[in-house]
Length: 408
Length: 231
Image 1 (cartoon, each protein chain N blue to C red):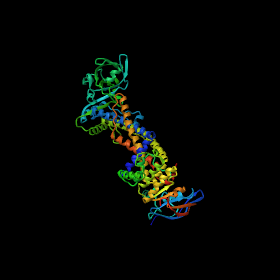
Image 2 (cartoon, one colour):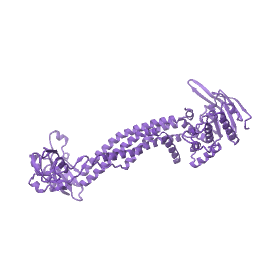
Image 3 (cartoon, chains in turn orange, brown):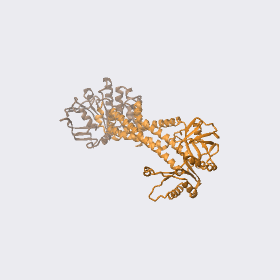
Image 4 (tube, rainbow over the protein chains, first blue to last red):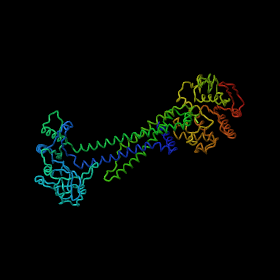
């Protein structure tokens, strides 16, 4: 049996290479299909590996708590909030927390001015603990201090991207920038962090939390975000359960009511990114499988032509003793090899393409190709070959020897 | 003991509403090592006779015993096996595989027997040596002359050591000089003990044979032993 397989493969290869150009054009559909799958997968896999690394460096044991208003309430104009009281509660009663900081996002303006330059940036009011929680460290100058918060000092620590956008000197310390009509003295410049999924982490302005509160006026209506990092050994699940119970109690939620806040771990954030990438992969994979289908039909078409062309040959083989399965195998293996060859070419082409794409976009992670993608691409193209080879092969095997011999 | 026994063989074709009786009650016996010709004009039924004898086609009715084995009721795969084991075909238009060289063509029927490459090569080389083509083994059919192609085809028929060699107008596509050479080869094969059945419409070819069956309208018109050229 193995031997017959070898014989059939040899003869199939000879017939594939006998019509080199035609075989290549036939399998082009498979080549393009597999190449696009591999290109997409290698790029997204590279990205996902990179994101994984980035989040690991971010510190996976940090939590973010935000308010969340259910849609039904939002229709009624109700806004759920996290307040300073919630922060205080967690600070006092939360367990396993290493550092905790409130973040208050600017709600009036995100405009920053320096001289004649205006730029838009993410402006956050926070405390010295953000350094630990968010893993932000200064390259020049100092970070926010506790006293800055207590005295509502008008100072700012800025990211490198913001410095660049505002045309600030390389060392921006002691320069003054304008936020919401107030002047802030730059005391520190953050180390650059790079991008995650095109989201620049270096375009931000940090000012003391209390200063931001006073800028926003009506303190009763502030909605803050709370970020905290856990102590070594603390379990993320346990802490978030405990915090959920604490906040539900504080917000007087009955058992039937949903949480009016969300606790996000950076792992969850990473999972979200992974989910997005997974979705993209699936959608593109779906589109691509259509192209493989079209490629398969192309193979079937040419195999049918080939069967007709070789009708007499088939007749000869039958006359000298070929059984149905000999002929069936012959053509099936030819279709299989044709599409597998296409799959292999597509694999190389796709990886090359992915590498090219990844390297042509600055800052993009290098393409990575997982083994399952290779197995999938080859498996799928082989499957397509067999699927679309069956009909022509069966047609060949069922030919009547007399008719086939008489065929001109 | 008869190698081939035909008992009241008929073969009918339906052409529209008309039924054509290609073979109409043929009974005959062929012994081992006979040298037999079927002759007749076109439409006499001799091609149908060849298809039935070669197990390419099944009779509408009647019994066909080949080597004491009843061929009746066998399916296509079983008929393929019979053809592979018992019959060596030699066709008018040679019917070689165009992409395989002479050696490959001769080895082809042995693939279906599951022989190893080494065994196949040995047998095929012997067969090509027998037909005098041992120096052309790596040539493709289109690099060979008509006579050489027919010799390759004869080698392919011989390589399986069949019970019958079945030739269909074996010199029909050859010039007269080459025809003579091929018929000489047939005569030699007969002398070596092979059973040959030749279907032809040429009297010169039939003249080589020991026995001539003339077909007319699907029936046997005459069945005569004759003084063959080689006998």
